[in-house]
Image (tube, rainbow, N blue to C red; front, side, top):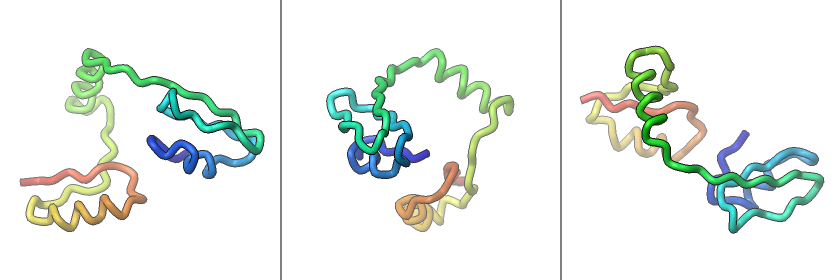
Length: 95
């Protein structure tokens, strides 16, 4: 799985032959190739659902994917690490 977001055609190259590509830009769906099925979806805001998810995470019922907790004085290092990519989870800055 890859998050192609706005990459669309470049993201399509990551999909194996005969695979499935799901994009998020209805007006910019790439043409299918190599037997790849292309689908597009539209995300809609849902504040009530987001509030439920945040509450579940804050209460410990839904685990958050945290890569590392780092002190605030390491924010520049953390920013560079995020820019490099390849990390599952988020960095949490601790004051």
